[in-house]
View: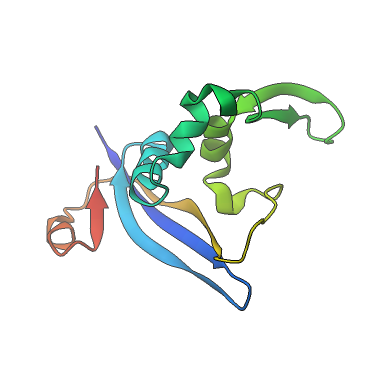
Length: 131
């Protein structure tokens, strides 16, 4: 299976400052694998809890609007929304809350599809992570 090269990015907000950057580069087959990687490595599986915990399921259904943002044309789960938006940091509707300790949002960008290059040296140096 061909892999794609992704940039895993973050933005951190706190009361006195903010920081933005790249956590790592990742070789993965698709956006769902990237979602799962971020959830496991940086979110401590809280993203997947939204999908499995019954108390979160209903409150984490999001309306999908038409191009004019006037009519609801369906709903999506938190995971579907994050995959479509490529992470929480790209969600314009996300409201920052409880910044006393700071909040870190994650997202990703597709850098290159169908990688054919051998990145074994960069993988060995832990510059690129792989799934």
